[in-house]
Image 1 (cartoon, rainbow, N blue to C red):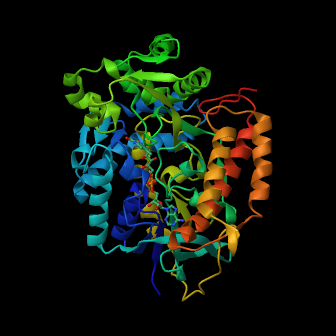
Image 2 (cartoon, rainbow, N blue to C red; image 1 turned 180 degrees about the horizontal axis):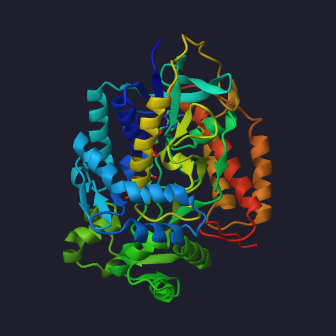
Amino acid sequence: MTKRVTVIGSGGAGLVAAIAARKAGADVVVLSKTTRTTATCTAYAAGVFSLACCGLSPDEYFKKTMETGHYLNDSALVKILTEEAESTFQTLMRWGVRIKMKKGSASVRATAPNGLMGGAGFTGELAAIAESEGVRFLDWTVATSLRLERGRVAGVEMENWRTGERTCIPSGAVILATGGGGQIYSHTDNPGRITGDGYALASDIGAVFRDMEFVQFYPLGWAEPGFPKWMADVELVDFVRITDAEGREFLKEAMKEWGYKSGSEVSLYARDKCARLMAEKSAEGGVFAHLEDLTDGQLKDPKVQYCLTLNAEFFRSVKRPLRMAPLEHYFCGGVVIDGFGRTSVDGLYACGEVTGGVDGANRVGGNALTNIVVFGYRAGNIAAKECEKSLGPLDAGEWRGLHAISEKGERPGVLRKELQEKAWEALGPVRRGRQIEEFLGYLGDFENRTIGVETPLDRLFALEMKGLHATAKAVAEAALKRKESLGTHWRID
Ligand SMILES: Cc1cc2nc3c(=O)[nH]c(=O)nc-3n(C[C@H](O)[C@H](O)[C@H](O)COP(=O)(O)OP(=O)(O)OC[C@H]3O[C@@H](n4cnc5c(N)ncnc54)[C@H](O)[C@@H]3O)c2cc1C
């Protein structure tokens, strides 16, 4: 019998946890829904970390993180984040990960394959280290349920969505590193596989959650028809005019009023206020980024290219005002953990975006990547130490999709789109109690629909419906309960 740690998710949190657990002596298996490292928010990230390092004091950093989170953060977790980030980054560098650090920040952009996927070099390096340490990967595999034995997590049920094969892997400890739930929304920059599965897996076995109403919307997203759903850095406001329909530079005016000197400061500390203002102006008649302001020389400037996020060459041919609007970016809330990633269920650990507590009501830009490194490392280490001997073979389990399946059922892709659009209306940047109540009613009926599965991709979409539904429900219930506006949660009623 082995001491096996099963890690669900191969983004940054899962990979760091897997390597740490393996180095601490456990047999480690990592599951991911596609191939390892891709289709993760970590790979999609700009690749910029904020942290107390190279002369920025942990005290100062702690203060900023708490203030930005409106003091709803778990201060013990923030203390760990601020005090341990620098030494954990040094550990990763000793493992062989290439990271550049300077006062207050770090970057992995130098190893990125392109400007769009700033974190893909980072996840690639971590996966290679994990493989060389003997971590085993199960790609194309969806964790569908957590098995309990005498109140402790003892196994993970899973399904390979390409072959339909179901298995249950006995595990002495399980680390949930499934990321957030951005795909509940029609407007998000999260990859397609980020469907909140971790929230469903954890809530099914009674894990405790916090702060689910605090979904961070990134203030600037490209909203032109035909454009990809993707963020543009708020720092863009320092290079081009961003105006409302009347041509007023409302964002610059607001920044001054809020006491910020640059767009990058707003992107770090005031995404909440800025996204609210953007949502308001978008509804009033639209927000426009005046790309016609940019000279050819500016288009070659790496800083401008960073802000545009999409290929700068493309913008050379579209020098005109372009529509912008906020889009979903990040889940601040999630599974409650202690400083070692232990959850309220024995044998279940969690790290990364699936957890809540570090960010409170609003996240500091760059803190998400620091969070996955610091708490991934801690969770991996402790899970290996506390891991029990795994049980013998477990039976594979049943179909764990939310819906019944029949040949005549609705297309899962169509059903998903419907849910996403309704979630955006009810739980997007602008929220009203009555609309949230109606949405909860819709979710009740949603469970009773029947879906048709013809292709392997249908099967994946069908399995993901459970995460989407559980996540949307958790956000709606929390958003309804919190009647005041705070941080990223804006109740206009
Ligand atoms: C466009 C973009 C840019 C960003 N830029 C930055 C930045 O520069 N700095 C910063 O700090 N933050 C940034 N963020 C936020 C940050 O990237 C994420 O919060 C962070 O990477 C989350 O890491 P994670 O490991 O928790 O989850 P992810 O990296 O999202 O990985 C989740 C993994 O879980 C797997 N998974 C999910 N469900 C299951 C299941 N049922 N079975 C098996 N596997 C499953 C997925 O396949 C995936 O492998 C950005 C986010 C986006 C979308």
